[in-house]
Image 1 (cartoon, rainbow, N blue to C red):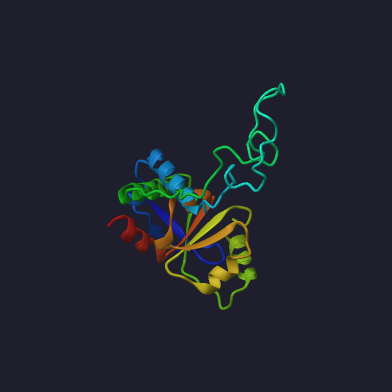
Image 2: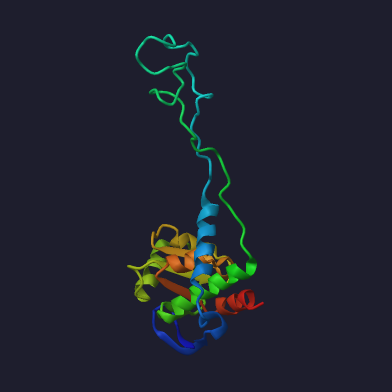
Length: 209
């Protein structure tokens, strides 16, 4: 599968990039995608939630009323979950939500996500670029030229680029990642995938090894 390489003006350069069928043309595995996205979201959770149970609530330990003869239910403490201000029953406690997945499964999930993007023609190959200074206007002009200013866009660079990253930081719909940090969630979360020309060999070397 060949895709035209665009320049910063959004016009074709006359050159084409070949998308490897082993990466962008496999049989997608939806369950692998589900597991990888689930792991990504679970690993983002802090797990610091906490509520007080009856042994942690501040309050008197005095028995509220006599055991029998009141016509009501027995009550031994204001800390009971039955009373306002009492402890919570089986409340949340700090925990670790992260879990591990097989490397081959995670690789299959990324291949499946890239295949879906290629099938829907939402992958654009852009010639390598750099900004002279970190200015949001540079990135705004770029997404406007590529006609993706109103869409969620993921830019994939071959290596970390401070000027490009800082130029996109204030744009809500745009995200910049390196080819080595590409993950299933970011691929699927973006409407358009803008891959620089030098990023394709890096993606191939990571996913085909």
